Length: 78
Image (cartoon, rainbow, N blue to C red; front, side, top):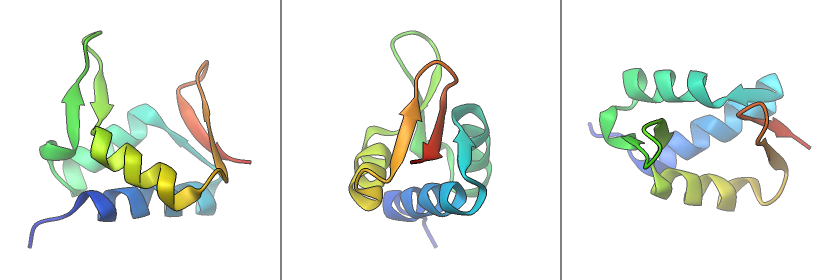
């Protein structure tokens, strides 16, 4: 059964609510191995990133209850 962007976004929200934080690099490794390569891409700077569709759904799901920490490259509960 194929995984969906919604399932990936739900996992991200759950991880942050459970652990309080999710590092981008850890999320990318987990997403690749548990959901598939299709949810990760290499951005213009040559860095691995989570697909735009997943991030869009993730933002919609958390509705402002999770913040991105740009300096540390992680999300955390607010």
